[in-house]
Image 1 (cartoon, one colour):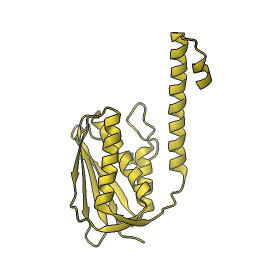
Image 2: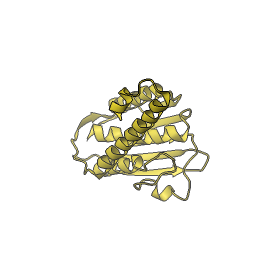
Image 3: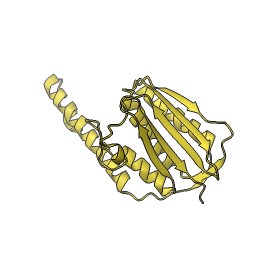
Length: 195
């Protein structure tokens, strides 16, 4: 399709068809990458993490990407600067949080408010809550929202939240969602201290 794109000789109809083929190919590639990511057993590379720095970096990077996509999302950071140090695979957890933020962005049509809060848990570990003011989750699927291929989006794969759950549980943690239709949703991640 990329070779064909170079040979359209300025024909707008051919160019449009080639663009549709390329868009479809990129979408399929993205789906395959998500399937492979979900199917792969996570091999955690646990390292010391300063939780406040981790959350700042993760949210800052997501916000930058959202702005590039044209989203007008308000990301509210709510955690103390003296969060404890933990041990975790920062790349896996960053992806888990990004998947949740992406769902929140989509639930608010890219124009809502999303709060990311974090606090130490009694007895050690960290709790993170991501809340949005979007449409909420349909009660019919709320209990299956972290299962693969469960989605309410026309172009969604239903793998983002399932992958988030997989990464959180690989750390010995737990993830849950609370939602009221039309009143947003809150995803809570709890990660105990583990070596």
